[in-house]
Image (cartoon, rainbow, N blue to C red):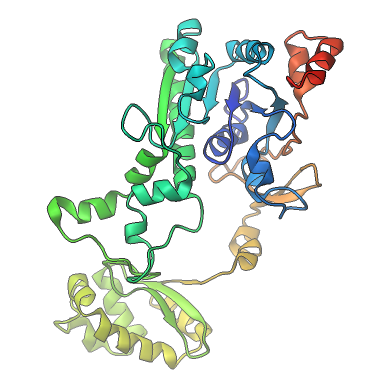
Amino acid sequence: MQPLRGITVVSLEQAVAAPYASRQLADLGARVIKVERPGTGDFARAYDTRVRGLSSHFVWTNRNKESLTLDFKDPRGGDLLRRLIADADVFLQNLAPGAAARAGLGAAELRARHPGLIVCDISGYGGPGPYEGRKAYDLMVQSEAGLLSVTGTPDDPAKVGVSVSDIAAGMYAYSSILGALLERGRTGQGAHLDVSMLEATVEWMGFPLYYSFDGAEPPPRAGAAHATIYPYGPFTAGDGKVVMMAIQNEREWRGFCAGFLDRPELAEHPDYAANADRNRHREALGGLIAARFAELTGAEATELLSAVPVANARVNTLAEVWDHPQLAARGRWHQVPTPAGPVPALAPPGPTGGAPRMEAVPAPGEHTRAVLGELGLSEDAVDALVADGVV
């Protein structure tokens, strides 16, 4: 499934949010020309060396792309970038606030020249506003969006273990670009898309925001348990294995009491009859459930829960995720080339027909000469730009 074949994306990108968005477009067939700094490239290349000397972040977010190194602040580099954008369908950037506009790459200026161009800006907080110029690393945005207030234990807030604000912004940029391409197909007009990490994350905070609507108490931080649904979370079996389980409705609760606790009468106990009651009395009820888990091994507990059925899960390590039997059964792991050799990569969720696009993670500037050759530059002209550090 390559519906974006023929679409060209020029991405002045760094870190996670914009590279993640453009990788989704590339996975669907778009040609993505990734513009990087001469010499060092995207600074995410240096985050770590965990993938055979390559950065884990970079390998994750940059397959299926072409790398062009270019100093757009140099007038010659800026001219080359504008020539690339003139032939592109999408221009995506997540530079520091205002940097693109100062370089003559603002949405208004670009769209005045190219009415069919889709310009997507990703920033921490958007603008205008008092936070427009703030640095916006993922942790800062998680904090500003209230995510830390509902994540962690009662004593200690915790950030989400992945860069969720970057990912949220990247996915909204991706879906918004898809929508803009459909709209352009009807009207011939491009669009300006302005995606902020803060707004993307606050959108995902809808449940706790409405739960605390009009001054109501917010959901408490509950660790791996659910803040307002019970029982829902981790329980330790007699062999020390931790089992995650979740009761979502009263039918499951009755089945759990009869089939797992072997105490069907608890289903009608006034302290536990409805979720709100169980949530209020979670300490006492938790003691009853914990005692039953202590009588069982982890395998026995999951077998009983599945027979009810009640949703349950293992608490997997990352090593166990690499070997997850469901991912293996569905053939989700493929090989993607990198400068350090092939590495496994997860196929894009969704499409089922044909092999996924799994082209290389590029080396810095790997495609510079080819891309500039398409613009008509000779080898000698490119050599001169290389010598001057422009590309």
